Image (tube, rainbow, N blue to C red):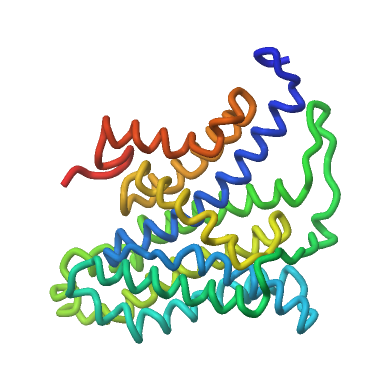
Length: 293
């Protein structure tokens, strides 16, 4: 017993919180990259997450391509879609008020969601767990589904790898420099527009990867992105707008906080993240890892 609660129930809710936190971290990481490097508030991120799940579902249902190839193909397809969107539309909005980028991505999200709702309705479609990750492991104090454990490990690896790419590599230094002084970086022979396009594609691809990872956990539905995007924005705000490390740490932290709230005070589990966001903004308006203006 922990605080009068059976250890199985406590550990189970911690696992649920960790799984939710894994998706929060990956999605907020993509948002943080796009905002931190492009200064675009990407409201289409939830739709791109849904798009990744649906692409995985469709290539399985229509082409018979299984989970493992879809784990590569779905994020690449969403990243390519992001590249096209950035080249055709977003690249024209960098020099105007950021509100235009927000409105464009919000409208794009509505269009994508509307198309899928028209074609597939609002009911969810199941995506089977791959046979290699089916079943679970009895840890004694809880039963751990193998796929849930895979999601947590995959999310940690992706988040750490992305942070290292942006913060510790030459490519990442070019990205950061291009956002601070694009004309100077261009003078050194670096193709800044291509860098910005790749950045948006990377953020969109992370959303698509989160979507295909989520497909066997949640039902694939046109509404799955819109149900999550507001929470992910709250995670980004708490971590600090544009802070990559903040997005990762805060995603897991708030996922665990949500899981623990379901144990001790279930009625508040749906609002606890927003309560934490309000408290953080009152104490530190720039977020936990953000830099003051």
